[in-house]
Image (cartoon, rainbow, N blue to C red; front, side):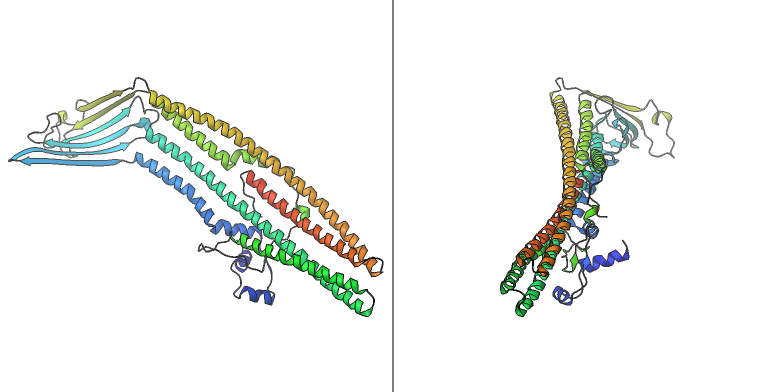
Length: 480
């Protein structure tokens, strides 16, 4: 951010050191508060934006939790019983289990020492104990994918889901802020145009009053000029309230770095708009449709769900297989690599433990039911993708058509204002020659003011429609 922009933001958003009343009385310099200024402040400090950014961090934390199922685990247990001068048992069992991604296997390092008079002969070891190096592999259920791999893969997919939701929330708060900005713009332009109308009416009233005293104009013209001033002042008071309210609503989006709300100062004015440039590009519709089909947050969320269900489907199909787990462990009485151990007590293929586990539910009703549920969710998701995609496409096309229509109306309105100004200028010349009346002058001038306000309304509507077009496309309208 340039030093000039920083100065403008500080002047606008933090205000001057004197109070607002003093600013108004001293006629402080007006500062333009642009959409770019609003974007910089909102994206940097708005609580909703900060809150939305926590979504992806939360999803990444869940990935870390899922990775925890692959963390090596060390466990140890010691049990001893001594009674009546008899050492019943003295058991020490320890194991380091290292889960492996490949084939869902577990690598195990163990040391057992089980001695004592009443120790089970099946588990009895020498006083030196037994060391073991083994592996457990699921050959049936869990070979391709198991619960821990399924959980981790789904957690990774949910990061993309959270990022899409984050983008959606940020786009939503920015769209609301842009609409409020243009409401403020319209209220400001309404107030400014009518204030100019009041000044014109007051100047005309003073001139006619002077001519009335000189006998050049009838007194009724002075009364009519006074009524016009009063009517416009009453209308100006209504617009002033609307301007203050719109300023307060826009201030809802302004926060500083200390998470404290800020208020838009009175000397801030909206940006100046060149209505000639308000025309949609012919390639805009095609570009937005293409981008929406690739990165729209709603579609991204559905694609993430689709990937998640695809992983769940693989896991549920895996659960239809029988459980067939094998485990093997090479054992030795070795406790370290420096000591000498006879070959028949050391690690070799003759010293081992082997295990085999088999299980298979005969009807598989629970597993088949869960797989069926996943398939139904996938089918529902495909319908959601079709409906959402079509709705997004139609919304974008509709808003683009609205934008094109507003642009055409704006061009007609500008031409009408030019014609009305010609009529008013001609009527003023006729009035100076005594060939027109004050009533006609006021009517043409009031209509011109209304037409200019209508033009600002169309500018506001166009820009709000443009922001909504990008929002419907799942994008954020950039301020610059």
